Each structure stands twice: as structure tokens, then as C-alpha cells.
Length: 492
Image: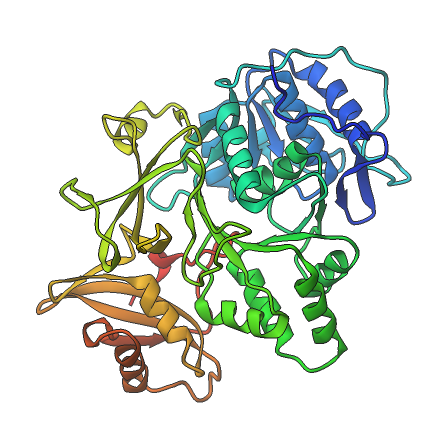
């Protein structure tokens, strides 16, 4: 059976992961994870205290080798939510660093420390050889990743090895991803983007990942200038890169050169505003490409490395992924263009097997013939490129008989020079059904653009019925750890 994470031929010298001064060759990662895996067999489920360190990589790889589902935990999660996740997943073991202080809610599972060597060479305690374990079945659960919990308590999406392999191989096809690539990122390791794409992706290809630990424009410039070929980030990171590129000093020039030298710049987890696309392209000559996925589906679409990087789109469906747009009454939409808005439904080998302990939620998420209801609304270009316009619950606005996606209005607002950040929601209106509300962070707080000016700006770019009826000014938009705007926190 083909391993999920095959070992490259030059494992003794090829770097697998690097976190600052701490690095691991494939040989060291193989040995450390094998020893730990031998201690995990029969453990049921394993929680991983997912700090941005080599220990997290060793812990997750060890669980995968042992065939034990790993539950990545966000160290910044609040007590109530963490307690729910631990009670729901019932891990028998928790893996952490020897110097990590764990909250009391993790007192029950057996703690196994993944230690750090005193000299800090690679972050793994040496030891004797371990007996090789058989490769688990492709359908066996690999990870249980909890959703963000925006509509209730977080749900544990059970991701089989089959889904991880299918998604990573489809991305390798789309992005021409090989063992020669060196991926740079600073994404958290408790979620799909940072852990599955950002760590398991390079390891499946036999390539390398350099994790910055904490995002900085200097760190991006340094790593891309010293061999990095790919950059993964979320929109807030690319926004900071765009801001830094606006400078005129040597740092801006060095960053522009580093980004221009990368083979691939990829943004995900939320839509990258068009104006940031354009700012980065103007400064570097390189286009950021986007992809679209979810915890339950892993990756669904992506702009190909050899395709057209079209700002505002997330590309076409990846190999093996079926994708359709569906109207509210269940009708499958066959048209294309900006006025044909429907919910994205997907199916394929990239899907999860269900929500842990939640057969009701699993049944509600899937159609009778196996399509997953994403809750994301989109339009589709004639050539199959998908444009996400927002979440069905928060971003589809029904105003004056029109269906309007919040995303295109947000992009129009961000094109205004007086707007730094923007979010759009709908609120009940006795005449229109819903009115469009813009939440704006002004570029100059002392002189925000007038409400009428912003409304006219949107109407001129899009259509009169898409103009905001109300504008509210904020110092900052509420965002989660992945940079997504928390629209449910926006209240009058």
C-alpha cells in the first residue's frame, strides 16, 4: 500500500521542516515519528497541542504512522470551547512539548512530551530504532479537525487518509508541486490550511517547508530570497505584504524582488480583495492565485500554475472534484455570469466521512446522492472559474427582489482610496426586505469618506441596487485566527 507520506531517496540530507533555528531532515523526522508512533498504537484518539514548532510535525506524523486519529488543538482556544472539543473527541493521549503548560481540561489524557534537545539542532530527542508499522487503510480516519463554530459548538470533521491524499495530489497536479519546492508560510498548525496543505503537502511531495513561526514581511523576504519557491498565506498577510510594498526604501525593493522570484504565491481561507491583488502585481509582476476549500471537503477548486490568475476567482474544480451550483429550491443551475448565484455543492474523494458524534449534522450536510452542501454562495464564469460571493447565512443579501453577494460590494468599496477595510452585511428593511450595510475602516480615521460618496462609488462600479444604504465606521474589523471577518460580531 502506498504510504501517505513516502520517504524520499535522499532522506538523510534533505530538509523536511524548518522552524527558525530548528530543522529536521527526513531521516530525523522518520526516526523520531517512528519511535513516538510505537507508543501511540491502540491509543484511540490523540490530541496534539499544535504550537508552531517541529514537535507538532513529529506528533502529527507519528499519529498518522500509528493509524491513530490526531485532533489538532489551537493553544489559543478559550476554556469553554476547548472543553467542548476535548469532551467530544475524548483523546486518550495528549502530545505536547516538555515546556508547554497545558490547561486543566487536558489533565485526563495521558501526556506524552515530544522533547527539545538542549542544543536546539532539530527539536527532537534521539533514541533507539522503532519497529515499522503497517500503512493504515485509505478510509481510516487520519485527522479530526474542528470547525470554527460560527453557527454553534464546533463540530469535529473526520478526515480519512483518502481525502488528504486526493486533495494533495490534485493540488500537485494543478500547481506542478514537486519535491524541489520549498514552501514558506506562517499559518497555524491546527487547521487544514497550515497543517494539511502547509505541512503534509510538502512532506507528501518530498519537498521542504519553512515555517516562520510568526508572520512578518521581513521573514517572507528572507526565506523566499534564500531558496523558497512557494508562499502560502491568508488575505491579512497579503494585505500586509501589499502595504510593505508601497514603501520606497530598500526593504520594499527587497520584498518585491523576493516575491517576484517565487514560483507560486497562494492565498486562501478567505477572499483576497482585488485591490491587494493589483497592488502586489504592480510591485512584483507576479499574480497571487487563490484556491477554495473547507474543513469538511479539503480543497475543491484552484487556479492552476499554468492557468490564468484572475483576481476575484478561486479557479476551476480540481481533478476528481464534482462541483455544482444549486438554487434555494434545489434546482441545479446551469447558467453562468454574475447574476446566476447559487450554493456550491461538491462531491469526490476529497470529502470527509462525517462529523464525529453528530450523525444528524452529517445527514443535514449531505444530499441523498452524496453532494456536500457547503453553504457558500458563488457565481461561475463561462470557462468554469468560480467566484465566491459569500456565505449563504451571512453574505447573500436579498434586497428589492435581487440576490446580491456581499463579496463584490466589498471589493468595490476597497477600490475607494478612502477605505482601508470593508465588510458588507444585510439588515431587515420594511421596504427592500434587506438593506445593504457597509462596515468601513477608513484609511484616514480623521477624515472618513462620506456615506453618499461610498454609495455612489459602488453604484458606479456595479449597479444602483447594489449600493450600500447604510455605512458604519469602525477602527478595525473583527477577525479570527485565519483572518476571516467575523460578520456575526457586526451589530448595529
